[in-house]
Image (tube, rainbow, N blue to C red; front, side, top):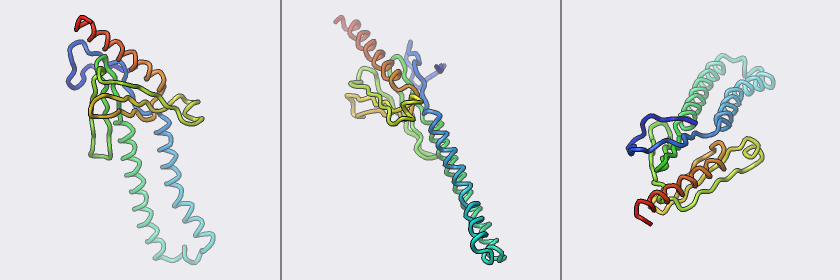
Length: 183
């Protein structure tokens, strides 16, 4: 998939197995919402011009509409930028020894956490709806024995495959640690 040359706190021999981002359909939804938001005021101004042409022709209403449109489009661009940053910077990295969860919450709030494969108790994959089933994207939840109860990989491609890979890595980690203890 994707190879990282260096991870934070990388251990000797640790290799990146999966580097995951949300499915492209989330970005597509964001673009569609933004396009509709950009077209809505234009449609509203056209509707006002058709139903009340005397209001639309006044000089003060033109200045007021310009201010409203400027503020509205600034809000739309800010919303799009914030959601795009959130989409792009939400990443999940699965290595041969741990799972790293990096989530962007807003523009200036980022949370990075990790769990070791030895603490994983359960991994589940969930696909909801016909579009998710057709495009093969969904959520993966990793339950742990530690203080952090679970990691939630949101809208990732091929969730069943990701689940299988994590479970395989957990089993390999248990076998490796069992051999090291002489069990």
